Image (cartoon, rainbow, N blue to C red; front, side):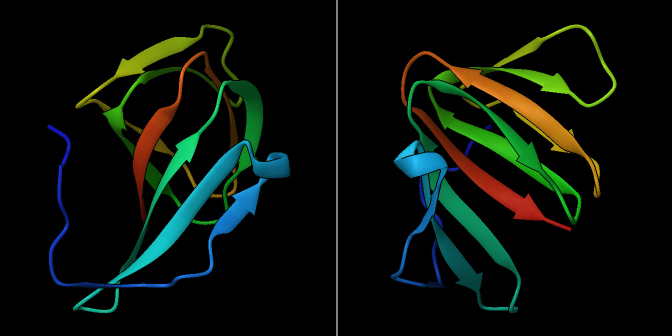
Length: 105
């Protein structure tokens, strides 16, 4: 189930803006020093590359995802999440604003 609130964090106020503003997020620094991003992807089809493994949790909206090396798209909705390996990539397609929390590591 997706979180509706994340308590006890510091927020880096400069936004992370990707793909000409189609994806915008803010970095949260947790009390233990770990980081998450909270953002939105506007209607589009984008390809993301990963360095570290990531977990994408859907806060609102839905998306279709095509993982590197796969041929079948998978759909994820509110409260669902998906894992992306490090040093990989995935395509994501959204038809409505997609709100997410991304965990690293």
